Image 1 (cartoon, rainbow, N blue to C red):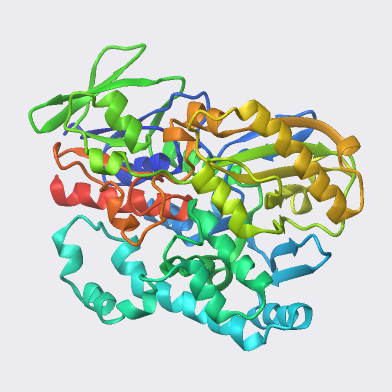
Image 2 (image 1 turned 180 degrees about the vertical axis):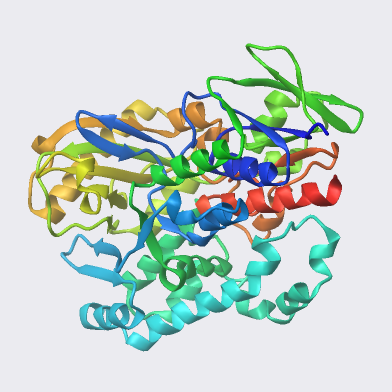
Amino acid sequence: MTPKTAAIIGAGIAGIASAIRLAVKGYQVDVFEANAYPGGKLSSFDLHGYRFDAGPSLFTMPHLVDELFRLAGKTPADYFNYIRLEETCRYFWDDGTRLTAWADHQRFAREAETTLGEPAAHLLAHLEDSATKYEITEKLFLHRSLHKASTWLGRDALHGYLNLPKLGIFGTMNSANERRFRHPKLVQLFNRYATYNGSDPYQTPATMNIIPHLEYNIGAFFPKEGMIGITNSLVKLAEDLGVRFHFNSQVEKIMTQGNRVTGLQTYDSELTPYDLVVSNMDVVNTFRKLLPDARQPERILRQPKSSSGLIFYWGIRRSFPELGLHNIFFSGDYRTEFDHLFRRHDLTDDPTVYLNITSKHKPDDAPAGCENWFLLINAPNNTGQDWDALIDRTRQNILRKLSHALGTDIAPLIACEAILDPRSIEARTSSSQGALYGNSSNNRFAAFLRHANFSHEFENLYFVGGSVHPGGGIPLCLLSAKIATEMVKENH
């Protein structure tokens, strides 16, 4: 019996996960990737003896990766290994205040009380509330399609309805955090989690206070080979299952006939027929570029996009013991920073700087006595700004900020540099406007304004990745693959 065939457009993490799940179901799977490498944003590169993970740098919910190996009948540790972090992040403010967020809740709460005078009970209650929000929403919103009637009729839906007041749908993240904490620095610390899906804490609903649960209650982890280890291990698993990867193979068009897709047309080949197609490409560009003759879901495609990022990759000619794997140097005026991001589509002169240094846990990522610095600034999505001028100005502001915080002139220590901005993010990953998380989550209905994981017009077309339900980031992208491929079983 000839196996059914499936095509995946894009070898991002959701595309790879979809390929694995379909291969386990017995499909012969081909993955078409426009770039010469897999992973999309979850990729890696080397520069003058320094190794850098190009995109995502925080690893949470590792069980979603392990699940793929177990689904294929494999032992996860034979492919992929990671450690749980005792320290989540180190925080720095311009006035000299420093605070370490520990995985141990009691230790973190005690340090916040000692450093900021915030009662430990406030922080512990906040983490408990985050866990409650997750428990209410997990099975309803994260593991199922919001676009199927069955989702809203079961026991999990009833549980969600009964606990709706606990979700904070009608208030903002910032207002909830201001009610919880006395100290503005702790409000700022937890407001930061809005940026995990590219949103504004002064607009996004307090429901987004679910996000710290992933980092503090489930835990933060580090892949022993760096973040690229996630991509490499899953590609190896997919290949072991017979999945075929076609790199430098840009899809030109999804072919359709009636209410079905019939195959793909790439720029360098004839039409190839497939029984089903899964697009890991940004949903806006999937419709605009690959399905120009199909009915366009304009209401969803025209939704405001999430923020983007401006990343500097610096090889640094010394080590800093006061820095950890994850570090945050906060802005002095957070509200103004987000006003610049979402209303002015600009960058403030005092941006919050996220600094990731994988050589802290993987020393061979940098030469001896040196460090590989990944610096991320939240940036507006690309609307035609003068990015060259913005990059030059922001680089100087970052150098000034870090030199002040660390008491050392950083500029002479930079041995090499690479830069990724919203324009290049858009070009390399087909992300609409270079947005990192698809549509913005700056209103209470945002979850319902993401595209479904299936097509309403074509019965064998599916969508995965950060631009569709349930959202952006590694865990949600993996869940999008699970939701979409489980529908394949139902529909075929």
